[in-house]
Image (cartoon, rainbow, N blue to C red; front, side):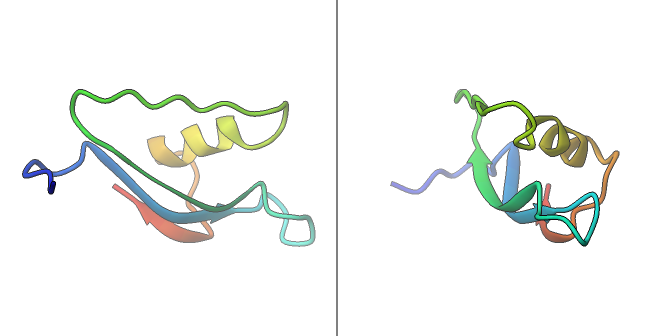
Length: 68
């Protein structure tokens, strides 16, 4: 079944590294959030949860991918 409403948030292949010499904190993150659904972000310390939030708020620019 195809949802007629556009998603509230769509993230496609987002990657980010604070330092290009270090491994990426986020690599290829993708998800879609639709009205009436709940999304939880879980992970170990320093795995990129806060970085993902900052990317979604526009405080950081992704190195690759897009969100909207």
